Image (cartoon, rainbow over all chains, first blue to last red; front, side, top):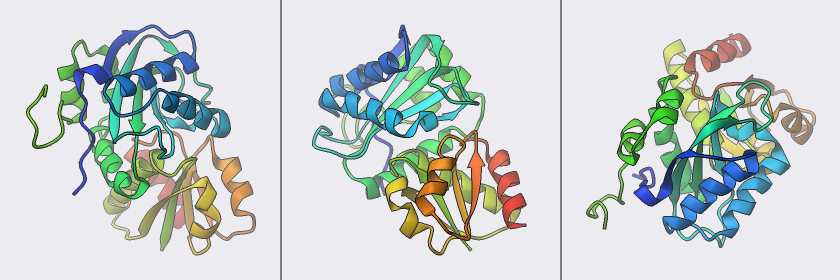
Length: 158
Length: 94
């Protein structure tokens, strides 16, 4: 049974300022790197996905799920959340502008689909994007997404 | 009945689409085999699919990628809106 990657405090940035979508994705890339999930090159690959395929990663109004394929710059599965002080357009025809960017790093595509599916359960309620955007603590973000601060079986903050 | 959820990479957003499509089908009382795929693998994945679910943003690329196929492409705006997904699936299958 796979579970959603943990969301440590180092991977949460609330009220970040970003001039454009690339800066917003870089911010979430830095959060993934800080938490130990990725090397810094991963941010460029997440930007590359949007350059290649367009803004489809904006999967709901106000919410972008930045991610890239598994690669050598992914050290382990990871999750990061950045909320933006001012919403930024990504170029999506319906779901712009973006207030919340979730960053996702995967080490293996198969295992991963199951854990992302669990994340989808958190978003059953359409009000969640607004609540995430207004969250003031990492704990609040974790509560909304139903994730833990540390991997299962380890002490929080370890 | 086979449905394929497609995103660019095949590891992130298509998994969410797959989950919520399954939820929408449940609510409609329909059963289907829903899989997730990336654009690179879509031609093979869609070969025996009736419906391809994707983002409005990717629909044109999906059309190009599958070429001649009988699968119907259903475009989803909000991946978390199970009602939207359900209505569109029902219109497509029903």
